[in-house]
Image (cartoon, rainbow, N blue to C red):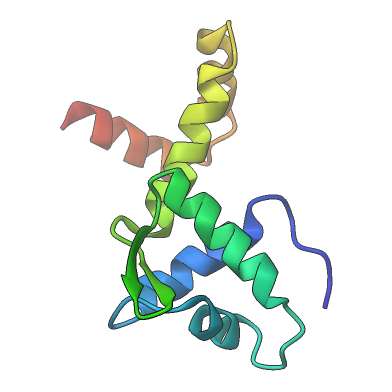
Length: 117
């Protein structure tokens, strides 16, 4: 198993939760992510707990375990991450200018359309 990029496991977990037809236990999430068992259960629990604490995942007790769901999906997780990164920068205009400047034409038009809504 290769090393994941920062935030990649969170995104993968949110994708699994979003694709589920019901909230899942950490074991169910792990089994969908890594059926071979290479990903540790404790890593999944830690990541799910962090997602819950950030408000990105829902959680409820089911017997002795918690079940987790994705009320907003992976896109909300990425948007929240982008917002946190932007809020850490004093010169927000420069960050946004560079971000928009790095978009391809299709994404730039999509952003313009969204801003005009």
